[in-house]
Image (cartoon, rainbow, N blue to C red):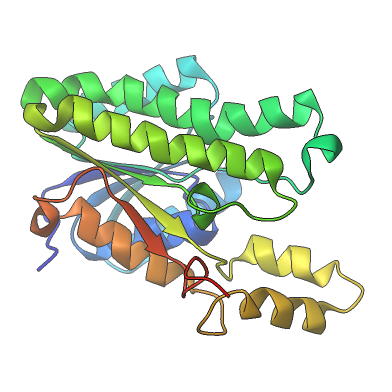
Length: 255
C-alpha cells in the first residue's frame, strides 16, 4: 500500500521540520521528490540524505512568494520529468500576537507565504495536472485553520484561508482528475519549535505547557504528519478530496 513508484512529487519548505519528513517519507515510498526551499544548505542536506538512503531526490531553490520562481520550478520539473503527480504546499511562517499586536506588514508577510505562496505554486502546476486529468495536491494548514488559537491572529487568519482554498480547489477540479486535501497539525516537535522553546525563561516548563495543549499530552513527531500526507498523496486515497485532516492529538476536541 501507499506505493509511489514512478510518481513525481514536489514539497515546498522541505529543507527542515515537517517538510523534510514529508520529502523523506514520499521518497521512501518510491517517489522522485523535488525538495523546494530557499534554504540551500539544508535543502541539499535533505537531498543527499534521501539519495544515501537509496531514494530519488532533487533540490531546487524556490521562493513560494515569487511568481517567477514558481514558473521556473514548473519548467524545471516538467523539463526533467514531463509531469508532476503530487504537490505538497508545506512552506509557511508564523507570528505571535493579537490583532492589536499585529501590524499590516506582519499580516502581509504571513499572507504572502502562507496563502499567496500556496496559490502561486498550485497555479503554476495545476494547468498541466488538469490537462493530464491527474494530480494530488496536499496543503499543510494547521489546527489553527480549524479552531482559533489565542494570540495567533495573523497565523490563524492565513491558515483558515488555506483550508478554504483547499476546499475550493477540490470542488472546482474534482471532475478534472484533481484531488486537493489539507492536513491540520497540532503542535509538532520540529527544530524550529525546539529553538523557540529554548528562548523561554524556563524551557522545560514551556515545553510541558505546549505538549499539554494536546489531549494525549505530547507533541507530534514530524513523521506522524508525513504519514498522513503519504496517504493523501497515494492512490489509496482516490476517493478523498476536500478534506481537512486534523492531526492534533485531540487539541481541537475541547478541554
